[in-house]
Image (cartoon, rainbow, N blue to C red; front, side, top):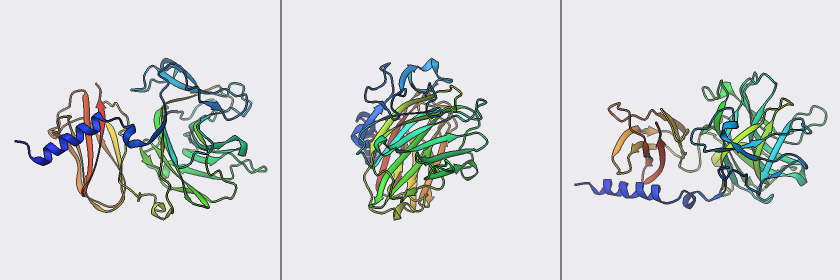
Amino acid sequence: MKTLSTIFFVIVSLFFFLIPSTVFAQQIFSEDFESGTANAEWRTYYAGEDSVLAEPMAQAPQALTGGGNYVGWLQDLNASYNGSGVAVTGSTTLANYSIEADVYCYVNNSGGSTYTGLVVYADSSKHDFYKLRVDFDASDRINFSGLKSNPITFFPLFSKDFKGVDNPGLFPTTDGWHKMKIEVRATSANETSFWCYFDGSLLAGCPITDTTSTRNTSGSFGLYAFQNFTGIPGYFDNIVVKQLQPITSVEDYTNPNIPSELNLSQNYPNPFNPETKISYRLPENGFISLTIHDLLGRKIKTLVSDYQQAGQYSVTWNGKDEAGNSLASGIYLYTLKTGNILQSKKMILMK
């Protein structure tokens, strides 16, 4: 006979599986382009420019696993803004939110600099926005910066480089699809703070805080592509925007490895084969367990069972059980537990 704890876990697992994620996530926007047409709410940041379009997945340099039949496409075709294309949507009064998307990232492109990424707090009336863009050439960086620049040096007035040397093993060496995310919050009346992620990992050096008096304190969200006249477009998919609760002080976030709340991220890639990465954040020291179960609540694999310090962690699962046997294709649940707090998400193993 199953114990009460096992029965409880089965109920909780099925609850997470059957109830739509939007119930928990406070999702306010999504776009996967699977209708074959981009959402009519997309608009261009620069007047007269090309906005994001839905194109067949076959047009992308590589197919995105689990990406469906269509993908978002963005390019400044006439290079009127030095090859910079920006598509945005959402109200310019929107504040405290996150945007996450699959972004096709270029590495050492022979035609010159080619950046792709995400945008937050865009407001064309204020001539500014913030962008998180990859630059995986000799610079080996992910750059987060505002639009406004010094008129003499042309460098952004607000800018932060996340270097590969500070994020060992995270940055890719070949072109491909990657998950990017920005969280933005007003952390006081005088500052706006940002948390930037790549493939589920918080980039070293976060949060970044802008305290300038001219900063944007709200704005639209969107997509960014820069091709430096080479004619290479940006590709995007699975865009999700969530409303976040404001925080009154950045004190809890000044250590980039100590979050304010327990968080279990969606595994990446998902669906996956043969392996996937699971990331989580611990707000305080404690004993934690990270386990894999099937939909009947049977434990398949224990990935972590240990006392850990507060911080950010990532674990890779190879789709095998405790005995080292490869599992069949299907839906599995992974659960993070610490104290009396439990978070669970579903993932798909596809062979």
